Image (cartoon, rainbow, N blue to C red; front, side, top):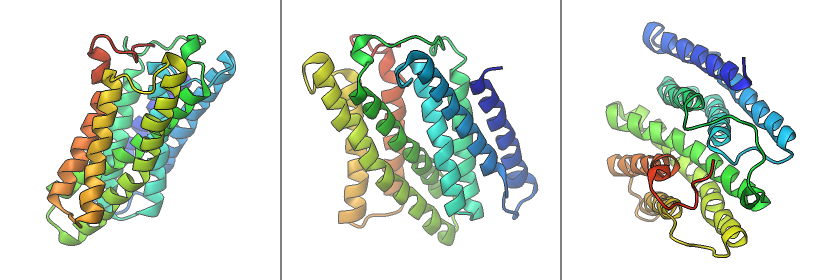
Length: 262
């Protein structure tokens, strides 16, 4: 059994516990599934470390490794948020993030994510690439929490609970935004200059990363400057994460992308 498979099974166990507390033990806080999620995160990070040792470079350069790293960070962020916010309403957000993590790990067993341990091509052997990938995914892990908080905000009617969820959504974006900005745009541009000789080439993945960044910029602008809250903010937050997913998965289906490795 691989480490990623063990993490997948662990996450499934966390999902089962969360379902029990959400549907059967209504009103009772889930006391320990977040520790199971943390265990999954540690397993996935261990997998990345072991692969990195084998190739003597940080193993985040292909689809399999990026999925493992991204899922590991999501699980760690879910754990941290669960510790900070223990209200019952937040358990649904944790559950959504856990389900998404299970889906991402399931993708590591599909043809889109070959798991062979190989040294990346020279263009990918750059510290700037490592910063580009890791910071972008850490920022996006916070966007995952904001995404599920936004969905929950739209579907519940309790105004007190909506206030809690709104704070979670806002905090997730305001933490994730500078991390994503640094990783996807700043470090990405520096790496592009060193690898391709140009900071920005309007590559499809670059373009959609910019669209994602602009969407979250709109969210923060109207939230901080215009003081807009509520339904509109939640919809923009959802759109931002959908653009994130398209940037990660959908752009790979487009032709002529410089991000077509691995």
